[in-house]
Image (tube, rainbow, N blue to C red; front, top):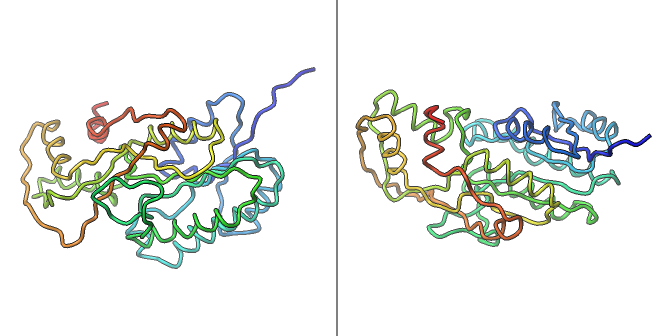
Length: 283
């Protein structure tokens, strides 16, 4: 009697914004099976039971305290989850001979703000507590993970999709527009927006190729804030009041994505116009 052997994937953070989309995709992959960890990654005993009960081939770690405002409200808890929880996972991974590949979801927040495209080798100078937790977790992974395990770190830029809550920039902007508020806009500021579906595709290909290294996952395009307002205005078919301001501190950043393009032949499919339409339920 023959049977098909599957590679077992362990996934943390499956209930989060990215995790929900990735989970759906992973469930449909041939030759893989998925097991989601739904408990507390800071609880060492619970985590140990999960690893002991499963012979994972690969682990994808997304679980984290993400919104900057949420992190700032409880910095100690954010550090406990984002740094301490990651350390717990790596310590368990190092005990498992079955694990061959590991993916860690990091962030563009690890970089210093820059008006030029940032490469994976660019200066790391986190501009938020959240970014600091991600960079410290990255450093631990690079130093401590078992050298026999291929690890991959994805630095994700401004992740977008219609189910994000309004504590994030784009949904917060849309909320203000719907309330017909005057939008304060620094015409010099920009960000690199990428749709969640493109990020999911990137992670899946990185998994299938068992890619090693650090990669920017982004659109590679800069979108100025006023361009977003103009797109909302066009699609909503109404004029939006803009008040030009000048920020004292730059919070702009966009990515060089040549490394991931070459490594896995990946490209962005859902650009900024699609992202705006998605928020307006027009796709």
